[in-house]
Length: 522
Image (cartoon, rainbow, N blue to C red; front, side, top):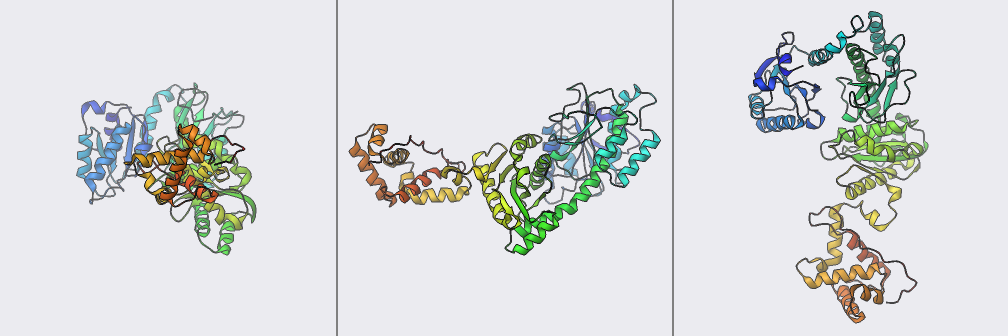
C-alpha cells in the first residue's frame, strides 16, 4: 500500500496539506499512534504516524513542530496524519516543518477515528494474502461472537487465543517485544527466544494494535511459525480482539499500580504502620524475604523505566510482587528473593527491546520482611547510582550485595560528592598545571598500591628510597595526613578512587594494587 492510496481513500476523508508526487509512491509498512513530543524511538521505517497533536501548543509551537517532524524523518516515517480535534485544525508551523523535511502531511477530521485508519492500512496490506484463502479470509460469525463475549467478560489472552482458531489451532505464540510469552495455543511448543521478524523463520509476525498505554517493552506480537497456517485477514481480526484484551488488562492494572505507587510513597516516609498497610494493599505477606529494585531511564523517561522493570519482573514469574513509582518518578519493584535472583539474566534481553534507551537498575540485599523494605529501597537506590556510574553508556543492573570493595562501594556516591571529597582531601596534588604535583600524586598512588613499602615503591618508580621518603613527607604536608596511620591511608586511597575524568563524570580507573607481601616495612 502506498501513501497515495491512503490519502486518496474517500471513506476516511483525510485532508492532504502538503506532499510531493515521489513521496506519495512510498510503501507503507505499518502505523504508529502517538502523542509524544519526541516519538522517534517508537517509529519504525515505513510507518505512517497518527498524532492527535496533544503535545503542540502555540507557545513554542514552531520549535516543537520542528523537533517532532525531524524525529519522524530520521526514524524513516513516510507520512504524518495529524488530528484536527484538539486544535480545530493542523497548525501551520507543523505543515511548514513537514514541507522542510519532505514529510507528507494530512489532516484527520475530528469525526474520523484513528482505528479506522489503522484498520484500512492493515486490511489493504493483507488483502492480497487473504485472496489466496477465498472463503476463509475472516472469522466465522460464531467465533467472532465468542471472542467478543470473552473480551466483554475480560478473559485473559490465553483463553482468547485458544478460542480464536477452531477447530484445529495452529502453533501460535503471543509475545511481548522483550520476548516474554504472554499466551500460546495448546500444543504450540517452545516460544521463540525473541520476537522474530516477519518471515525470518518462515513464519509470520503481526503487531497487536491497541489503544492501551503500553511501553515498547510490553507491546504484544502474534507469531505463527507457519506463515500459511492462517490467512492475513483472520490474523488481523484476531490481533484486533487481542488489542482490546490488552486494553482491558491495562485498565485493571491501573488499580494495582496505584496501590504500588502508594507503597512507594510509604517507603520514602518514616511511618512503619503506613508501610505495612501499603504492603498489604499490594498483596505482599508480612514475611519475606524480599528484595527491592529501583530503575531509571533518564529525565522524562519514567514510563520506559517502569515498563522495562515490569517486563523484567514478569519474566521472573514471582508469586507476588509490587511494581510502581516512587514520589520522584523512579520506578521500583518489591519481589520475593527467589524471583529477584532471576533478574540479572533477563535484564539485558528486556532492555534490548528498546535499544535507544538506557535503563539502569539497582537491586537491594534481601530484607527479612516488610519492616525492612525502606532500608532495602535505600540500598537499591544506591546500587542504581552505582550502575549509572560504572556503565553510563549501556543498560545495567547493579546488585548491592556485589559492592564488596571500596572502589565498588564508592560508585554509588554521587559524582559531585566524589569530586568534592577528592578535591578537599588531595588539595594541591590535583593541580594539572603543576608538574611536581603530578609527580607527588603518582608517588602516592604507587606507594599505596604497594601497601606502603618504601623499597618496592622506589623500585617501581626507579627512584632512590630517600627520594620516596622526601616525596611522602611533601604529600603529608600538602594533605595534612600521616601515611603511617591506616585511617589516613584509607582516606587518601578513597580520594584517589573518587577522582573523576575532566568532564566530571566517570571515575578515574583505580590505582592497580600490588600483590600482598608479608613485609610491611616502610
